[in-house]
Image (cartoon, rainbow, N blue to C red; front, side):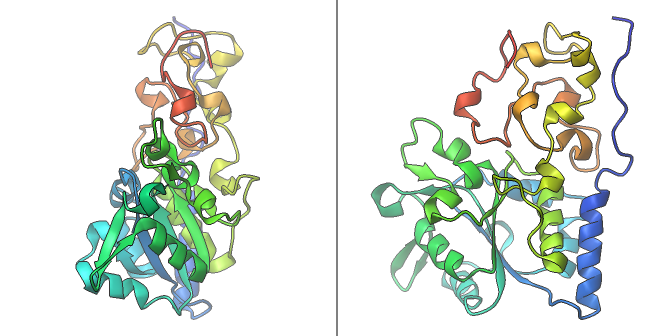
Length: 296
């Protein structure tokens, strides 16, 4: 097809909003207006793609985040401690103000024994036990990733571990949700920056920051003009709108077309695959098959 209806990238500085929050927070910390917050990032049951996503962040990168924005007491993947020493580092924060970040769902089967995160003084500590304990003390709770927010792939059928999301497990509606499989590091770092300087950001009815989840993929997609003109891709690799191939963009809220990934131009539709709706509560079970003919 000769006609080119595609849109240019919507924002020449797509990470600008999150970076503004982060820089403001660090400036406030340096000026003594706020204290650098203590933080714990717990991994429960899942693939922990959120951690890999964080480690791949470039602007800001993870070292900048760790040095300037938070006192991150525990993050299992990169922790230098192990065993009881690591567990005691976590316990040392219990009587302080801290941000509790958590990725992964919580298995409930067999009293949570499907996921054990520590052994302390001969006692096995389950993900369920430590999550409940930290949540009671935390100043803010951030569920990072679709497993933490909605159950996601960890709770996908047949869900043999009876896994549930963090809000469901805790029975709370004040958990800040940052869904994604994985979550873009811009969303997590930007949200933490906002929390430090301003407190809880404006959230939608589902507990997601409107700054990142306020519009659908469809609203922001560079292929939207093709949809408006009724021009659709017939197969993967075609350059037109992929709605008829089952793209979940019209019902999926996230700004992936704007922020993309790791300072590149890449995101799912940009590399010729459909949006599979990974930031939504229906992922993955109700979104399958991820590619099919006939629209969403």
